[in-house]
Length: 428
Image 1: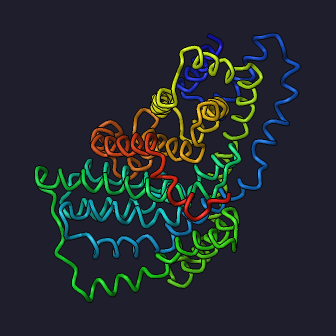
Image 2: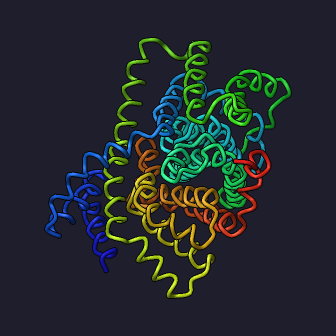
Image 3: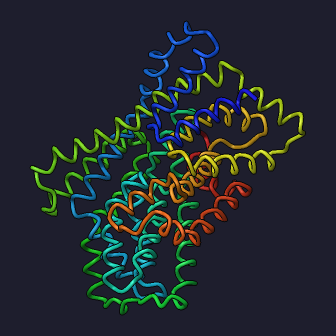
């Protein structure tokens, strides 16, 4: 009952459109005041401070900066041209190009919303100019850019690793195959709807065009190799990789002459605002997480599940259902911060691998990015597509089904996600 009251209050505050950080913090503060224990609020500054000072979290502002630099520095155009030369001629044409370019761009940026706002504008314009329905084009863009946080590098994986103390490098490796499966599922969906909806496709690229686009995109395509190769060889940590990729994006932007020095202050300020917003949510959620532990909510949930003779399979279905529902109302990072203090001890008790759980929860959060009323990718794409959130959400349904099927597969066949980390980093 206590758990239900706390989370009901939180959802009500969110539904009346309070900012996420304010709603989370106000719920925790209000509970202690209602309980008549205002002295507990002395922990508020300490918990908020400790929630944002982990070394691993340093990666987040640099991955955000890297994504913004790439969107401004002409890298996105080169990736899109390369993807068009590779797959523009197959069934679904530019829809397939959007998925493939998002998969490639995912290897450099770690944010779905940033990808949708940057690369997504190029993808959407190209499809609309070639006769694709506006809402469908927007739906493909919003869905395709949800691959970003699954294929490494990934801001959600960094956040999950910081909260759970599991290896971020292993999480990065675990995201590769699920991310590719997401892309394949979306490409199948586009191919199936191509003929009924009359989606045009491009002429097959000539050898000259393929060679030219590959040459132009070579250095951006090398970024994922540098990031993952450096982590696997121990040359740098995932946190240091974020700095490396930011510098790499900066150098490429200047080398291509698409990034101007006068644009840097605006890029840095935008990255600062995005980082501050995320860290403020993390700070408030850390106090909220402490509240749940202080009230014994994780233990109460564990006892309830044990009393029901729950199995690992049943627990996984419960986690999937809870995160899908919360994804309709909460931003993805907030879901991590609120639920993980409860889910972690449950996962350990039932023998659920925490690396695989991180991948599954990230996939579920991507579903939340595409479900109204609080679908962040829907908002990002609608800001330039102007289709309306609900028509856009309807066009995302086939892709949501694909992501959900991949999520269920990864949840119940963990060997798929764990193959690469177990192969390359078995000792960690």
